[in-house]
Image (tube, rainbow, N blue to C red; front, side, top):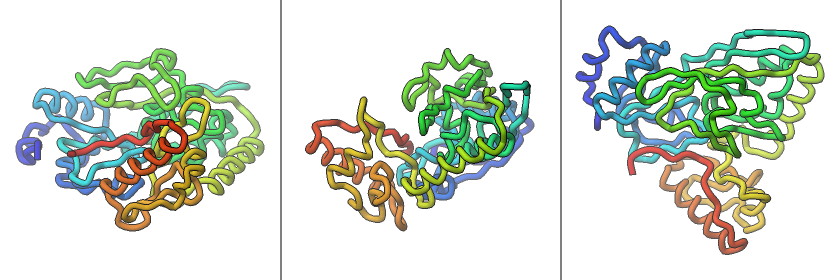
Length: 308
């Protein structure tokens, strides 16, 4: 353990508001239900507390990981050195400007993406419908440029407020963050705190119809009601990882309690007490099978963290 519990509590007196826990299992904080214990798990109440935490960790040389809802994340079985910084209290949505044809929203990073989609559905704000059914938070969706049905997070962004590893807070225009397919230039040590997004005004009924249609299509094609982390592998240029995994005969392939979904082959589901070791072994097996069949090397989309 890199963090001394008593020393950390003493160092944060008067400069931190929020929850602190020690030796917390990450199984309860990931959509896969997998992961060892984190040395510390912290939920700061405000940006100042976040800044003070990051500054302290930098001074002490302590590693940290930021966390939304733990989707697109595999935590190794040996847990996490240092601290996990949860953004669950950063959950505001506010209307900044609303005109006849467009609306601009302020959205904090800890807002579940589905909550934002539903807010827009109920308000008649269009442009985000394709992101329905994607797990995780707005911050994670920005970091990984989440996308579906021809809509990507970058298409909605006006600006993003980011705190760097020195505790400096800066607002960046969306065009300066290097967005591409499932990628941004935002660093893992950066903390996305909020974003301004722009959407179109529309009638509530057609927005709701499109949102519900996309959700039902996704529900029929993806195991959204099972424990998964979303897509495992990135789509190769001009192709589909899920299709190649399926055609290579990997659907239903299983290691321990981790199984290649029979509904969508680019999802691995935890059918019971799956482990990170099981998951990574199945990734290797599937990638090897696809390479033998197609000569293509699949690259992970899921983020892996924790002690080796």
